Amino acid sequence: MKNIENGFSNKNINTENRMLFGFIHRVFKTLFLMCMLMIVLVNTGYAADPLPPISACPTNLNSCSAGELTTSVKSVMAATSDPTCSGPNDTIDLVMTLTYAATAGTRYDLGTFIALDGGSLSDSGSTATSCGGAASQVGGGILNAYPADSDTDLFLNEDSDSCGDVNKTAGPVDWSVSATVSCKNIQDGFLNIASCRIWQQNAQTACSTLSQAGTGSKCDCTPLVLEGLGGFGKIKVVKDLSPSTDLGKFNLEIDEVINAENVGDGGTTDFIDVNEGIHSVGESAGTGTVLDDYTSTISCSTAGSVVNICTNTNTNGTSCDVDVNSDDEITCTITNTKTAIPITLTKDWDGSPIGDSVTLDITGGTDSVQGMNSNDGTANNDSVATANVSPGNEITLSETFITTANSVNYDTTLVCDDGNGGAINSVLNGNILTVDSDDTVIECTLTNTRKGNNVTIVKAWAGDATDG
Image (cartoon, rainbow, N blue to C red; front, side, top):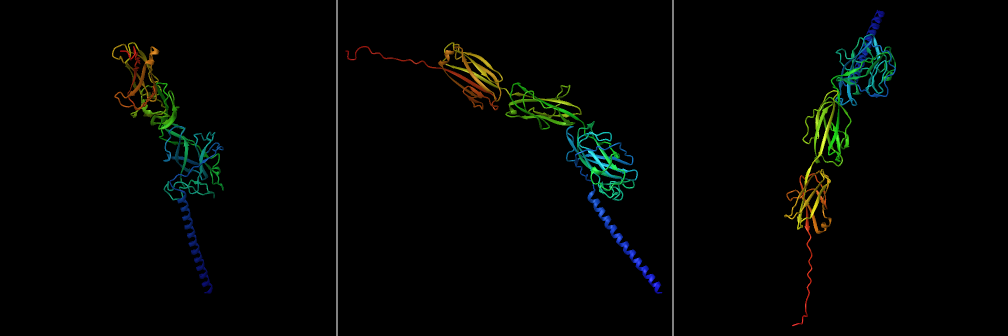
């Protein structure tokens, strides 16, 4: 009985040990799963993994064999930070979601190279010199991209390093990465982005970075493609001044960006690359120039056409919108004509004898005028000379006597007003008038007043005062 009792006692002890072991096992398993879940929650989600730039692109790719691992592009989307290409020299921020699926066993230590400079990446020779890249990380990927157990659609840890692995019994794995890439390879609205996805066929024990991921013979270099960007055209802006000798300076702008600064007549921008769509073309005043001193027009046309395609031209004629199609070359000409202000110079004689005459001169403006004004004995035969001037002109108002000696016989005055006796903003200094843009009419009068003759009377006495 004792042996039997001891036997039952030992059996009970073994049962209790097994129960205790099982309890401990379940506790550790639960803790392990909780830790893994925390890792998954921290390292996964729908945000793209960062893709920092690296200094070099892969040079060891050779006869890639991709049969045992498929990589496909699920989506390529423009990021909100920089979602467009304004030209082939621009860059665009992208988020690329790639799907990885093993078709044979386990594949290890996945990585992705993306050309940032628009060069090529392939197993037959690459031209890209600046690449972005990342190595997949254990637990990385998009959680529940494929509805299944939470650990079967993420990168696995099958070889005890931190680079992610895939297995044909788990996954596929969706992995999103970000990159800022060149816009130079756009054709027919599609941006082609050179990329190579790499992996190891055999397990490794040391991998944490892209330089340790993959192998030169296991890769897929199918390009990534972003749709719907449209193509590019070109815009050039040309300056035309009238008169061509005008000294005004102007800044020529495309999309409110100055592309040529302080240009005069004949100045131009280069052809500037722009994406398809509506773009603004215009100008602003350069150094020392006031746009209100000019009347302006703008005209734009495509190569080989004279049809003006400007829309939404502003009231000043200094800017408009153009609709650019792929491969368009559009030239826009902005013409500025210096505003003409009429000026008259009236000759007024006061007390002049018959025959005195002068030549009037208005010089330094749009026109240079000479006119004969003579007094022929009728009531002060006063004539008028007229010319056009522009804001900023320094105008000389003068006269020349036909008989030079006669000039000393006159006092001369010169006054200018607005034609109604009112003051003008133009400044008269001697006979030099500096024209102000606020004046619309200038009338000047040059008056010659004959100097009076001096008569001396001498008293002469005859005889002595004491005489009778």
